[in-house]
Image (cartoon, rainbow, N blue to C red; front, side, top):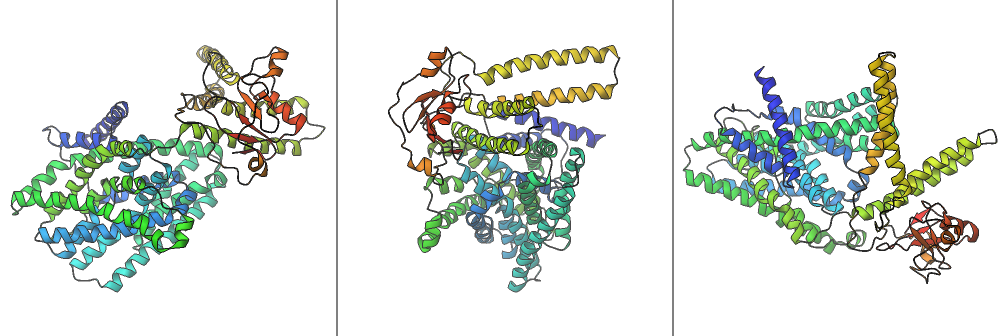
Length: 625
């Protein structure tokens, strides 16, 4: 009963504190950790033992997996050199750099000092990316930080095990190199194998509940066999997650993908909150144990602070040369990937918060290592110090460096262009697979349905300069009113008891699904920021019409659609032909005169003439530029 109550309190406290942190826009990991520290000194809070087995076997695999399935394999491959330099090179550099400082300051063997360096080397995935996404870092920076945090744990754990073996006098350089090769190669092989087996199985599973169950098993099916053969379970989990996430649209049904995303977001939220609370709850016991060591207290404090400073300093000392030196030495690297602005490596250097893996790994240190409690305290100081110093100031650093995150307005433009492209593909399939026996009303209904989706995406882009509702806004408002009336009628039938519960639930699921789709679309209906002209990030180099078209021409009827005025219609947004300058209304308008102008003239490219927009569209290739 005590354990059950403790778990309930842990989850509830984590949820409340995370909600409060989001409300006040402060770092969730920092708030949760500080709350745990305060709780550890309350007399009615029992000591909580965070064992290495609990973290490395119970918490680490699902945390890594949920990050891996969300990570783009395409982006990961594009940044693999940067990720490799951080997740392997920086970890080794930090492990030996911190190890040297700890060996000089503390009365411990060099192997034990390197073991401590390996413990504090890997930054935490949760702490860095949680802040990165909240403050709006550039996508490439977020991708590199996520990729680094996915693989650096493997390098750190292998280094730690090698250092522990060296402290016992049972390791050679050849043996250490073999361990690294086995860990990396075995982890990749098992990860790929598990992903292929589960992918084959998922193709035959249509029940979202069964598919989600398989998904919950996936990180442990990869981690446990890899650890059994002394390969890297971390690499196995990450590789399996990257492949399964990348192949999900092929291997899973739409319902299974939705269920998996929802369930893993919940698991991720609960585990992340619990982890940082547990980190804080360790503080009192760790400090008390280290304080009783024979080491002078001022020597103890100074050594821990020096190790913290070293861990923070070594990161920029590695990051800046790793970014610019390969480009100086290799023309091929320089041409394939031009050097980023100095602000990118600066913010990556500062995003080095440590977390739960550091605290879990330090408990792997053998009990007979001299001054083990001091080493555990040093690891705790690095975790707490980086969370406090770097985690709390990272948003300020991003702001001072004037780093811009992804533009929601630009994303909305890309989404609209992509929606148009895939909708056109669907309409072509409709033409190919329908025949004279297909009822005309079916074809028209399908055209109207996909047309509403793509028009709603384009309507989001226009400036909100009037109180008039767009057609899609009218649809959503009225459909929600209809759904409310339908649900009330369903509840009346339920309360009358005339129909079976299963029948009622089936109808309720249909209503809930449609309402969830409308709610999902409303997530993007907030005001889109426009602090610079809205341009497409796609330059259209593969479209000859966009390349040949000018950026703008003289409009024939500036600010109005002449056809709408002639027909007594109202327009939603205005577009302009870049061949003749004709201004006409968009497809969300009743007249659809821009589309009609293309049909009659075959002028290929039009552009938006709405305030703050500078994008073009090719009708021929369905290409945004």
